[in-house]
Picture 1 (tube, rainbow, N blue to C red):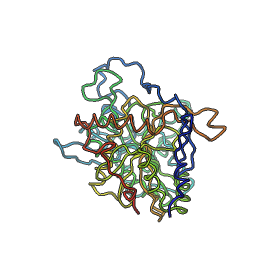
Picture 2 (cartoon, rainbow, N blue to C red; picture 1 turned 90 degrees about the vertical axis):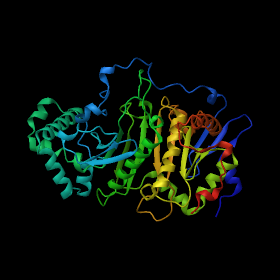
Picture 3 (cartoon, helix red, strand yellow; picture 1 turned 135 degrees about the vertical axis):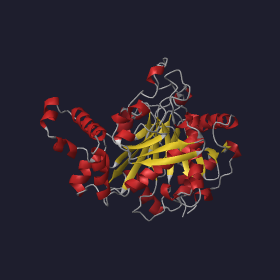
Picture 4 (cartoon, rainbow, N blue to C red; picture 1 turned 180 degrees about the horizontal axis):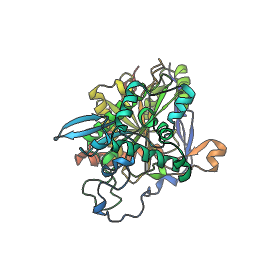
Amino acid sequence: MTLPATYRDEAIVRMADGTVKQTNLLSGTEVWTVPGRGDRPIPSALPEPRAINPHQNGAFCPFCEKRYLETPPEKERLVRVGDSQWKYLSDLGADQLFDTVADFRRIPNLFEIVSYNYWHLNHGHVPTEAQHRRMAEYLASDAGYDHVMRLVHDRMLASGMTEDECDALSDSDKLQQANGFFSGGHDLVIPRRHYTYGATQTDQLAGSGTLTPDEHEQYIRLTVKAMDNLYHLDPAVRYVVAFQNWLKPAGASFDHLHKQLVAIDQLSVQSQSELERLRKNPAIYQEILRVATTRKLVIAQNDHAIALAGFGHRYPTVAVWPTGAPYNPWEASPEQLRGISDMLHAVHAATGVKIPTNEEWYYRPPSVSIPMRWRILLKWRVSTMAGFEGGSRIYLNTIDPWRVHNRVTSTLAELRDAGAISPLRVGAECSVDPSLLGG
């Protein structure tokens, strides 16, 4: 089954005055780009740069390597061994945290979106025997006990409690608030660097695109491992939301790169909407690729992924699609995961660190048998929703897909030629057939 040609044609239409109207085939979102608004340079979202204080190296924010004790007890870290080897270390005690420097860490979020209490009170969730043992071992040392109690205290104050109210609680009551550090459903994956190697100015932040391709692969691998792990948190987990907010306009608390994974007890709204459309048209993914190819929106390609200028999104978007038969992130082969990582890394590098972005992962929930496709969207948060959007549910996107395509392809070619990203085919070099998103 395929969409009627007229429907495909209406997915993205340029009007006589130059207005571009787009419809998202997976969500039904309607987006307009009006003439003139996309010609302006994209401003930097960073404050005016200033010199970095070298005495703060490794301690610029709570996610930095000299401030491990300001975040909850870590679940896992990845340490570089030599030039090309990596070693996983898990369940370290508080007195072991500074024995090595983590290139990547997986930690619980101190301020969970979906809290441990949500899972405990609504689903009867309690820590497993292994999690109980991990918590007891961590608290058995003075350093671990002090670490946990200090974090619980800080979180209580942040929630609105006074010092007197905190002091009135027993240590036992406070420790009940620490269960989420060992059996919670909201994890962060944090790379080591706050700024790039050798940075001297505060605008030289270390983003996804400033990692090496090898580093970015490990970043993605640890994210996928964390996602798979959270599906075993509780039988009530139905979906794990994976995303990355870069810079404050995109919702980041710190200008330090990190991904977030949040377990929830229902399918996402997008998943449900996508499933309805997929049931009606099993070939909808091929139709999206057909629209992209016929409208010359294909940005880049390698052996395992393609990048497209997205259409029908509220913000300028680049979409990274794994090719071949559908699979979920934790089902990818090492070669497939590296290819997807390389493509995503390249798109981040072409976007740059000065543009606030949301990276959003979409994939098939494990409880769903219909073959939904994994994809990653990188959205440029360069505009603010206003009354027109709220009142009409038509969204104004300031940069149309062709301008996104042109901006990214020109930069990708330069980065590839400079050896800053892994090899890929760019723009007209791509040879894309809709069967690449086959069933």
